[in-house]
Image 1: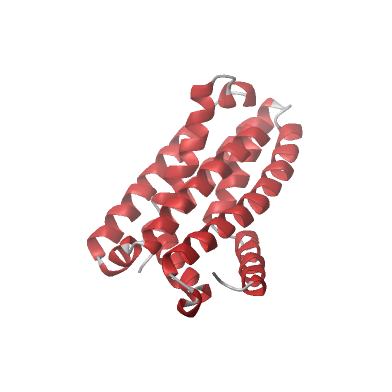
Image 2 (image 1 turned 60 degrees about the horizontal axis):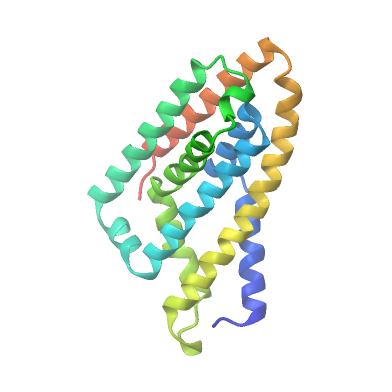
Length: 208
């Protein structure tokens, strides 16, 4: 396994990367402002679950396939962009309050959790980033590489959950005050839709 100080450096770097402006944390903040803290936390959990998929892909070579195959990269890219455009369309036509958006039932909570998973695993840039980032901290001289990559992926997921969870609480608190006003709710929905649309465009323009 990697040395303890190396794991600490990796965890700190992961937290800083999660804090830096990017599609995932913008997505979390938009969901939190629009739908509340719980929605943001559920989306965060979904995004973190998606990181498990990317970690396994790196550990067992699937990420290398995505990096090498133009077709696989393009298919994932278009799937992710289509989903973001769908969310943008829903946000623009939304007139619901936070209560109806999040809901009380397990189906609504599962929908938000699934939203985070789809957002994460349909972004091929995440797989390529993991393929470049995780192996830098694995040391073949300290044992098998696959278990090390799995541990590193878990640490990255924990760092992401801490950072994105904090962002969810802050953005959700600010959004709760704004959502008291019907005009403000409509503005929030439009802004969220614009963010989702911009993220879809960014993903469509992404190159390997």
